Image (tube, rainbow, N blue to C red; front, side, top):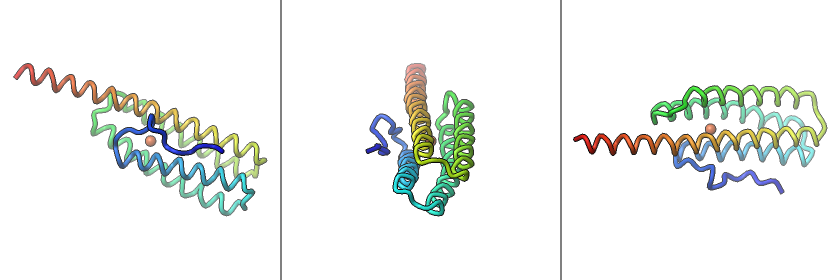
Length: 144
Ligand SMILES: [Fe+2]
């Protein structure tokens, strides 16, 4: 059974973004389950449409939060998010061609792997940004 839960290592500590990441994995799981159960394309496409909108809104929230937090690598994250939207669009186009179950499952697992990698970068960066902020707060404290 494929696991789509949000592992501890992918938790950033930002409630809004963590909940959104959990929801995205939940949508990927719904798609996975529907493909495996051989559900009609209407049900699958309904989840895909929801996921598409949710992703785009999520990325806006994420980019705003990273900007406000003084992210060290905001541009790279914005680029990463844009790449994921492209992967998602390619996936949707392929699904409309009604691929085999195996192919559809492979693609969903690819999206999941890519998304977890995105989370790994995000968590690492979030920790680094906080560390740098802590250091600068510390040096400000020493000066004053
Ligand atoms: Fe994200």
